[in-house]
Image 1: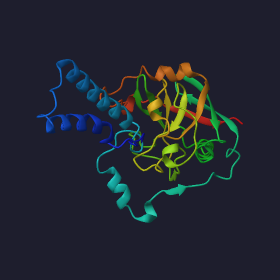
Image 2: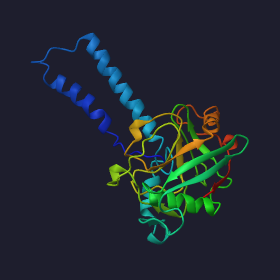
Image 3: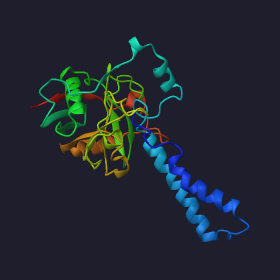
Image 4: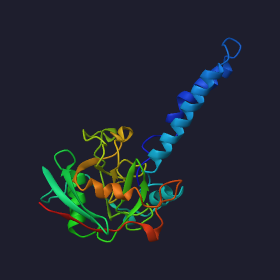
Length: 257
């Protein structure tokens, strides 16, 4: 469910307008040189690639069927997940906390969670971990040099927990200075800024293009080598989807403080 917080047309407007205006004013403007034309074309291609990468963090966790959003919005209110807009009243709604993520056959990862900055996100994540919600789930989408995404009970990017949470990131009018650096853990979501639920992702490298668009809430402090091993898992070359029988399994996530 990693998002599409970037609007589909935004990344193309400048390239489009430049090309459109050049054609419109052809009578008064010199034609593009071959070198400049190549630069413009390469720039447009890079924008498309960047948009594709961002889109993989979309839906409930990655590429979502086109009709998925409509199905969610058309569902009766009684079937819609509740929305958490305040931190849960538990031991993890303020301060720094730690969780151990164990990945089957790969090892253990310790993650520091910052509830001072993202109290809703951390208290919800901790609640799911304590209830053993994540036990037996998987990493269903892995993109080398980008991120590994998991925590979906359906294992395909369209599932989540019964509860959604308010997005704690700057594009959703919340102060969150945590950057998407190597080892950052953040929440996957759909186009709705308040659509995150259980799906999360961990960055393999710095990804500044995600800053302010997703609710980062912690950092791997030990076991990053285990996360790096996920990058070697065979995936679909188009969108990073991992075949169901190859998805790395989350043995458990446990709060340790």
